[in-house]
Image 1 (tube, helix red, strand yellow):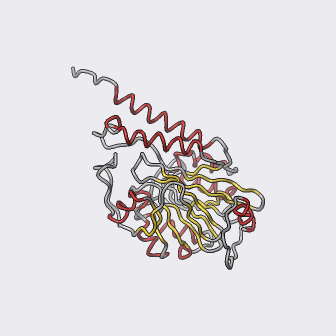
Image 2: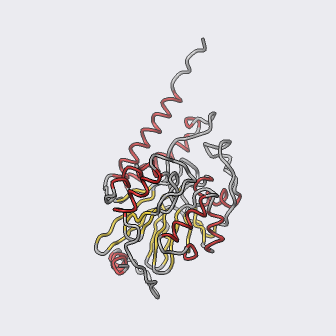
Image 3: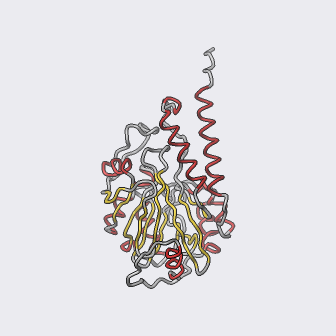
Length: 306
């Protein structure tokens, strides 16, 4: 199965030593059966602590989080990569979902992050202790993750919870690659929602069928009540640059930190392949409209009080 990844990487001019491959059987929890189970268990729930069924998205990529928060497992021949750890309470259900697939949380070698909010990184400390994995994140997010306290420049500052701190072991920038045996995941810096927000892109192959998967960060212009994006032009510029990156990225399967943001409940209910070459472009277009609407609302004159 993973020979296909080896030839793909070689075709891109990159050589990744495979070492002694781990034997992995597939498929596990195929989307045709596990997808509808996920949808029936979660329905329209966005509960961040409600356990969802694990789902094989494509090849060696699995959705292992809660109904309201995504966590992504990428299985490799030298160990596994996990993206996001949900809330503090989600750590156990993520580990249980990994075990339900027949894999071991102890085989996680890297834990990558999207944005540095308690509902996406709150469970990382426990998952890091369980696995011994290296936490990989951006410089801005590392400060928050290592302290467990939200950043003062976060648009949602004052409304965010603290969380158990974890220990980042590697800082990445835009375009950096995280490699592990036959796995290669590319970092896409997408600040805006937070200063340290990251998106991630990789290729998963099932036999001769290879798909480029993008885990695109939230990128929604959400804030505390008194925060005005129009007062922070650098943040708005970062938002627009990040949205342009997502729109331009190779992308055949879109995943997001909040499953409903990419219509995952409906897509999983169908139990069909998630292939959509326009998914990232449409995602960025919808978020651009949200940002434009927010700025227009801030620019509108305040109606006089009666």
